[in-house]
Image (tube, rainbow, N blue to C red; front, side, top):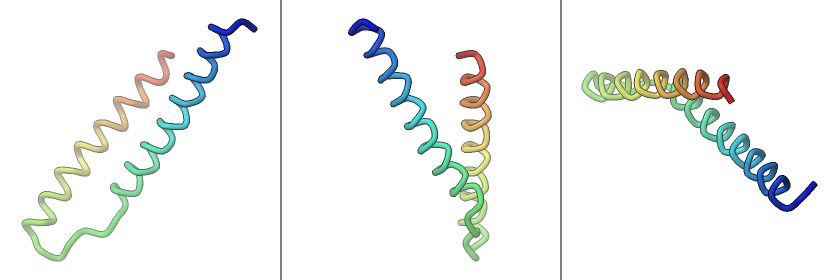
Length: 65
């Protein structure tokens, strides 16, 4: 394996590790309890919807690699 191939393998491993960390954070945010205040709940639900779209986009993008 030459230096370039080794660097590519390291980069790929780091991207996968980062992706896993990001997905774990997204899953945590999607499953946490909502605040009691209805306005705060609305904001949290909007954030969760955005995270869900982000996760689906990321999952779709990883399939093409």
